Image 1 (cartoon, rainbow, N blue to C red):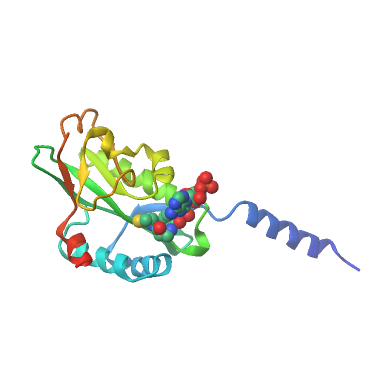
Image 2 (image 1 turned 90 degrees about the vertical axis):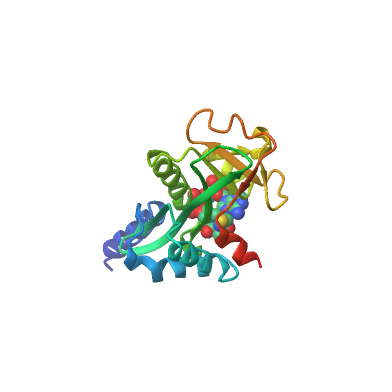
Length: 191
Ligand SMILES: CC(C)(COP(=O)(O)OP(=O)(O)OC[C@H]1O[C@@H](n2cnc3c(N)ncnc32)[C@H](O)[C@@H]1OP(=O)(O)O)[C@@H](O)C(=O)NCCC(=O)NCCS
């Protein structure tokens, strides 16, 4: 019995499992809309996040919008939109939301790749700081710290889950007591 062929197939399968196809991050294009919707609808329990992305896009407030692709397939998406500091003079803030990866591709580093690339892009585009509302243990690895450390508040009454990251050194030095506000599309979704 010739087992060498089967042995080879098994070796390839194990190798593929250990080395999944690499993902590539690139700016989202117009033709990606349906794939982006699918990513958010699959990753989140409701359609709220996919509607948010569409509303931000329609309002021209997707400052940074990147997709992760494996082969020909879009498997992840991240969006950054403008954030203003109420009562302060700190221009150039961005809010990271939402970020999602198709469930079957989660845990392979794709979300981290999108977040790092999104922050790099935001910085390169001249944005001065980023905020995120999320799991502190996860976002700390990308340089986010609790926004309370800068004295920066938020509209949601979130405590340590509201995090901030300077993209330009010192950009959050004078926000003590001020409130970061996301784009109006976020409030529209809440109501
Ligand atoms: C959050 C998300 C984008 C991360 O993408 P991913 O490709 O799975 O993430 P990575 O593979 O780069 O990182 C995996 C790590 O993130 C951690 N992680 C993932 N989601 C997390 C969460 N909600 N809270 C805390 N940690 C989380 C995993 O435990 C894992 O930790 P490890 O590296 O110590 O093992 C993805 O899990 C997702 O789409 N989740 C559903 C949508 C969502 O909750 N989005 C975030 C809020 S906007």
